[in-house]
Length: 111
Length: 113
Picture (cartoon, rainbow over the protein chains, first blue to last red):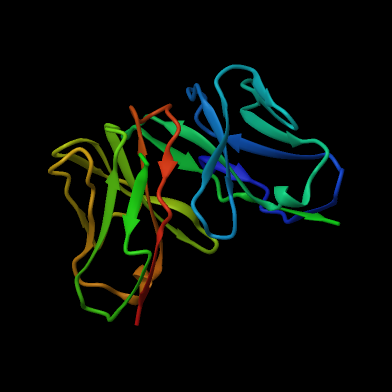
């Protein structure tokens, strides 16, 4: 099993739609998680941190299910500007204190 | 402005040449990281550093060398560039590493002919 797995998409949704992405991880000891946004090969930018069961920031909600080892990102009322690739990020401690990035889920919001 | 800067932004070179990519951060973060990003692979960790003079291998270290003589700088050197090292390279830093979020530079687009 990969350390972090994401559905690559693309998810094509109309403006105003609600869309959700899931991410599964293999290390049950992971304590914190992140969602990053990346636009067209630009640098990844931190979108949300998830340290407990979930986090909400405006139209964005992240939820964590430790028992099933997945985190989700929900985007409500999608905007054209939400079109990007969303990276799920999980810290791994075995051998290195670094983050492992999922390959990303691509979202295309259409007018 | 404080932040993390990479140079050059774009680089074209030939196989066999030595190339050094620079990374500088002004936050005094302890941890710094180098990633490469290729289509179909996502971000892959090359090397990281927990502090000055402490470096460690990541997932894909072969063909790369790093050093960290000062906290703020973390250069990445390709000793003898190969076409397979054509990629986008991102430098990142975090305050402590591990469960801390990372902040990325703009990236260096490297093409090896």
